[in-house]
Image (cartoon, rainbow, N blue to C red; front, side, top):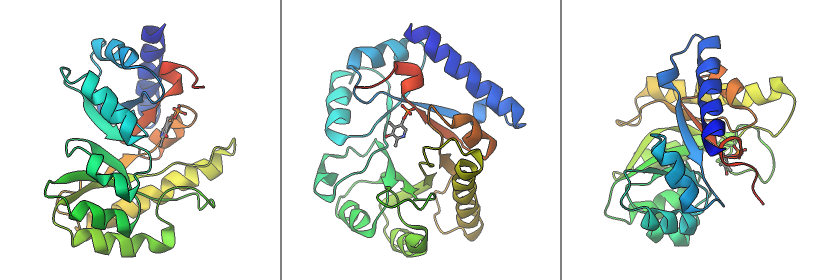
Length: 223
Ligand SMILES: *Cc1c(COP(=O)(O)O)cnc(C)c1O
């Protein structure tokens, strides 16, 4: 069951890459395992998959501990409260650097952190991610902090059937990323674009996604 779903997703990713004249190996799948047990992660790991995403730090740490023997690359894709920065292990890639206070809390830690800046490209109220209007100020602040490496950008598009609207959010992220790359603000910048989920990954890949975060299409629906 899990195997069929995982393979179907991998095939759909390759298909989307080909349709956009992109190489399948340039699209990285982050299997989003939130709410699912560590045993499900272990099963997908056995298919040869190593990148997993969780949206809550406590749940991530619990599974990371349970699966410590496996060579998993962990991604934290949900919001991180400032008072929980102390719980973030430095080998976890943080997709949700979204505000100056979080950057300042990370700056107090001695370790280096790999991060993506999350942007609210859809400009929805209550949506996570730095507002477009505040993006430059956040970039300037983070660039001055030595232990934060910025590898790329992350966004969540509208949950909408309107393809043009969804594409617009992805296009905005891509153009912000192209600008950061051209300006060479972050020495470690890799141009990662973390965008696309179960419902919209094909559009995200068409618009340049390098990392798609897919949960329900692999693990099934969540309660
Ligand atoms: C849950 C989650 C996903 C995966 O969503 P699916 O629709 O289940 O694929 C992707 N990104 C973030 C930030 C999430 O919280």
